[in-house]
Length: 325
Ligand code: PBG
Ligand code: ZN
Image (cartoon, rainbow, N blue to C red; front, side, top):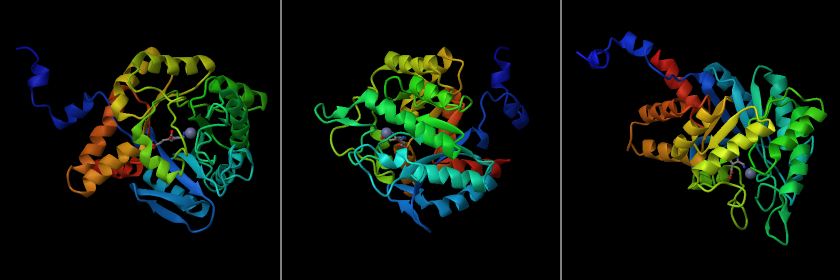
């Protein structure tokens, strides 16, 4: 008579009483891609169900998100013009600054996170300023403009900033810039462990941010390295990050668990574009039970230790959860 508890066919209610992890709409941050114009809502070929939207459409989208119980969004901008330093991201009239102001005005209860990077705003598509001689990103010059970008986001009313460029020293730089400008209470969610990954492919279509030369391997991490992955996140914690992140999610759940065990900070995973596209296309071709696999995937993130899930599936999950109870 051992392991009776496990062998007994549990009452449905008892099964839910003893369930170790659970999923809620409150776990999610939903990504939005914003461009200028009016009445624009263009579906992205590589990510069915994901759109580039103009601000007026985003305001309508927020209405829908609220009706689903989703109150957290992360914004990505597609500027009209791109240049070598990503000027649109450094200007109060840039696409993100404008969007945050309008969203907070129309939907003050939305929690608005801004992705802080330069790849969407530069004509070369890299995450910072390029050193012409080295043909790679100049870390320190990028830190300076990142601080400017953070202040722009803060001034326009962002509730949290999420630096995604993985520059060395970025968290310390942003924390002191924000503190200096009176934004001591603005949290920073760091893309602290970000792998150089093939899974970002579809995102680069939506954000129109494929690098025009080279790749991001000089500032993103080697997928083969576990200890380095943990050290990167812990370094960001030491610099003052409020939330750590692992990106992509699915192929890196071992890393999520290890960082979770090594920190007391909340952790996020970014369930990225390629992960979404894989399930979406398999589902559209009736190769998998899509709804079931989406929920199974989401719970695996929670089980691995994620507190927050950034996902293009968020709206679908909200609908599935609402149906199941
Ligand atoms: C910007 C950024 C990227 C993603 C989030 N922020 C692109 C990249 O690093 O190339 C990827 C998200 C996704 O694939 O869904 N640096
Ligand atoms: Zn970037």
